Structures are given as C-alpha cells and as structure tokens.
Amino acid sequence: MATGLQVVVAVAAGPRQVHEVSLQLAPGACVADALQACQALPLFAGLELARMPTGIWGRTAGPAQALRDGDRVELYRPLLVDPKVARRERFARQGARATGLFAKKRPGAKAGY
Image (cartoon, rainbow, N blue to C red; front, side):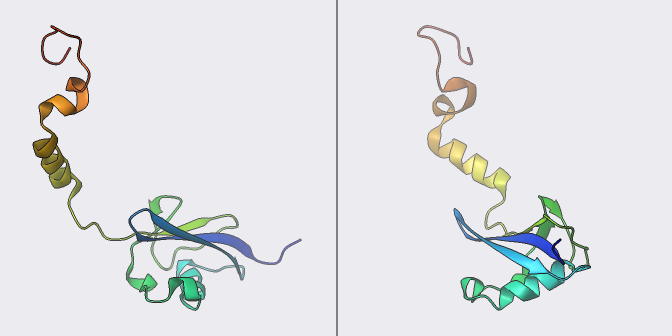
C-alpha cells in the first residue's frame, strides 16, 4: 500500500502548451504543497506558480484546499482578451456568411436556413 498522495499538476504555460507532472505528496497535503513541490522542478522555472489561478479537476481551489489521491491540480494563465470581445472581433473579420448558421446554406435558401 502506498503511503502518500499521487497527484498530477498541469500548468498552461502558453497557448496550446500544457505541462503535466506526476507528484507523490505526503498525506494531508494541500494545493500550496503541490505548488511548492513543482516550483523546484526545472520544467516550471520562470513561472510564478503561486500567483496563477488554481483548480482541481476544473473547479477553482484555493491554496489551503486539501488534496485527495488521484487529484489533478490545474494552474491557469490569465486571459489576455475577454472571450466576448474576441468573439465580436472574429465575427467582424469573418462576417455573417462564414459563421454559425450561415456557414453552409442551400442554394437559393433564405438567410439562416
């Protein structure tokens, strides 16, 4: 029987860049302990892990959140652009004919069908 927690820490370092590390932690460890263990690894050099928003399995978690065996601790990058603004800009670039319902329409059909 293993004595400790087996957790995975996933960090979104950049666009389409996700680094994952499997860690063995002491029983009763929390998110802050996992971040401290990762900070020493060369893979995460230059990243301020303690300042990044964290979550466990996609749900937000604070540094004092206790970990369970098999948890996935995720660290997220801050958003550079509001998703609503990005969608509006993309729509303005592509126009109505290249998105959503209007992308593929039958010849001679009304708009949106």
